[in-house]
Image (cartoon, rainbow, N blue to C red; front, side, top):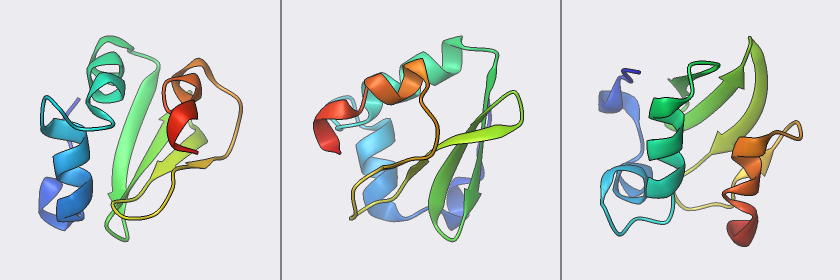
Amino acid sequence: MTIDTANMCSHLQKKLFDKNGEYHRLWMAMLDDEGLTAVVRSRQLHIYRNGKKVLVLAGKSAPKIIREDPVCEMIADYV
């Protein structure tokens, strides 16, 4: 999975890509799950499963769960 990080919030980049980041475990799981896709919009990461949005991650605000999905359980502590 490749993402255009140029338009991603720097806070979100740290949370996703740093090994000690809050969402790093989620990022690693996303790389292994072929059913998930992601796109950066408005500096946030929008995560989709089979074309349906399931989760929106922002840098400074809480994650927004759109649909119940196993990937959402990984961020339950941050909601």
